[in-house]
Length: 409
Image (cartoon, rainbow, N blue to C red; front, side, top):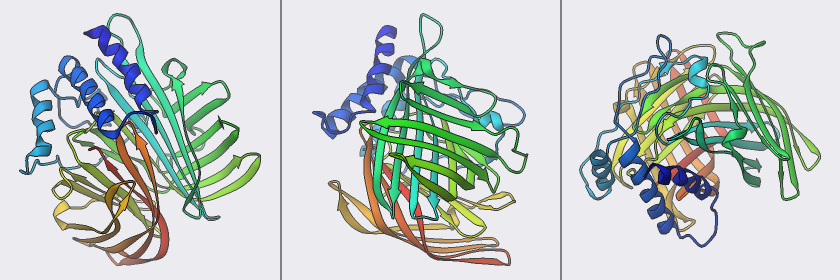
């Protein structure tokens, strides 16, 4: 069975690249479910407990045993509420932002970068590492992926995903450093140790992609304006390294230089397991002049919620974890997109001690794409409202921002 598991890693890596082929959505879901069932049954043990990023660094398993897996998988047919563990953000250091090696089980890790620029362009970059430690020999098996989406005036202009062999990955477990290359394609994300300070982390991101005649290169710098954090979720560890960042640089598309100057974001997820027993996640940010609200809503079914989280950050300051009971989130104006009924308007209301947030987000454009068998929608939304913290109130008027919705089933 262990040899079979190693072959499965390659199969699952291949499925991540499937777009429109002979697999139906149902067939892809069943295939991935079977793969994960085999992996979970033979390679996983359930562990829990919060990670202290300052005192001790250890890999925390987030996989489940076979009985727990079947129980949670069956929850999709059970209308009773399954509580989601509360998201408790904690301070992070550079080791938390760095690569986390896989140990004895399927391991998924990602970094996601986003930018909205003054010239009407916006970008989304995703780095995914899917790996597992070998059974009978040293080293890991798996694959790496880099996905890029470039938008102009909220409309998709270019998008592609490139696969890199895991053996071509250069990654540090001490500092954030990710390098991948093969042929004409390459990607580098590194922590700028020379210019960064304890209060201001700087990341340099560069890549070169040749996708069937379309050439894209980029050299961007992300400079954090507020403190990063991370916390444990039902599926692993997740948090923004840079909840809000100033982004500057140049992106070149088919030999045309495009100056990039705007606001960005960098997040990191590790020890992630596939949440195939959940319905889906809503997630995004609400940004004003000096505030950034990171929010998420995790769903057991279309209408039943498992949990929610909202964390408010302020430039040059700390973050505040908002009591989920004081957070109202209302999706509305449902419309069909890619054969699925999804909301196109969202209403936020938060009343927490010293905090008042009232915001409406209305869809401008939606980009649908798939990751494995999961349906993903990236929204460009028009945001209006206000954020109040203490004596400071900042208005948000017709501001374009990005949010997402992913359905696992």
